[in-house]
Length: 152
Length: 371
Image (cartoon, rainbow over all chains, first blue to last red; front, side, top):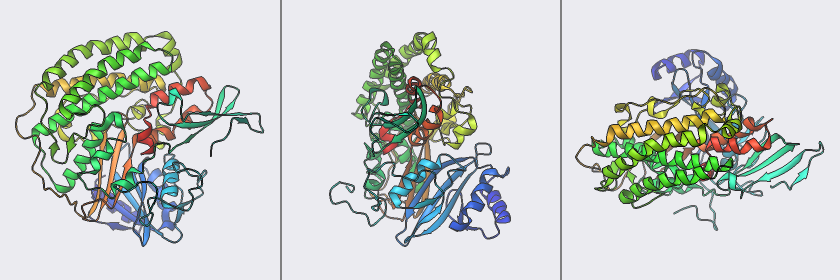
């Protein structure tokens, strides 16, 4: 499906859907609460068949954290970006790793680097950072490390 | 953090492989739960070479951040640089001269051959065959010399820049590449005879580390590892960049899903790379090697995503720009990270001796995983 077709189909299936303009691909904005309605639909609906989660990350916007999911379909080759805004004071969202297994590691990475709590994640632990690092999330904008060089 | 060697209540043995183990080729640390010789669980512990490249890039300009990406997947440094250059060019709508486009694809394919050669030698060595390593490195050295002539570096090239390449190719480039190709064509067949048809090698590869197409997609595998499971995914075919849409090459797909299939994909891919280089080498267009670009690059406000096919798979570069000289947020979707996440699934139920073959055919490069 082209970007326009994707958008039309999405608006039809999810009446509350809002879109972000200007990107290369259709970008769908959803509430964190709606994640578990939208994601299984994207994966299982034959028209979408978004079976490949190729990128999962977060962006710290100081006032909130935005989760970004990049999906594609290995049958139709269409791409879709799904974004969800999380509360900065208590960032949490359902895990998608039961839908796409690749999310298990990617979410662990976001958990340690951004402090996002993934509800129902089977194994939410530090992956890259050493033990005892909990609470300090390096990719947040207010993180500063006096010892190690992270800025050039 | 690190479980000591010990036994669990069920009598299972917990052992550590790495972070310093010859078969992990870098600082990968696996905590393995064994029942007898059978693997029950493989748990990777990462971060021994984590440099926080994504955070670093937030304070680097769009000309500077390319240099850091050479240090991610150091065996594909040209291709990493290429991805960054493409991202900036697309966002800034910079027209790249034809000469630069051809040079960049030539460099990419030479890099792919060099990377696959190192993988081939190192993997055979992991399985106990020492000779292939020397054969592979002998030919790889020729590529390194070609690179050194033009880029001045042998590993972290930093040759591709937004708009084209940094310097024109060395006067000897075409001659040396031709010499290399003439030799390497014979050598690939020799590799096949030496290793691929070896009965011991086949026994250690066939039906080892099998992953189905559906699982491979779900785990986000990419590159030769995904194509070994019969899924077509070549970025060069689906999202062609530079002159990839002007050359003829076959996307290599094997359907076995086992270690041998992944191995065969890479061997056959080297032959395709030779073909791409041959098609381009005689017709390198004249002209500029770099477009005129502004000294200070400011990406327009918005989001950009660029993918390239590295030797290991799909590298994605996701940039969020606020219109400044530095990116607001940058994310590298590295192929090795997702490939590694499937290791546990592949290894469960196999014998510990087969783990090396699985790690070998996933072609893990640790700095690429840790970033």
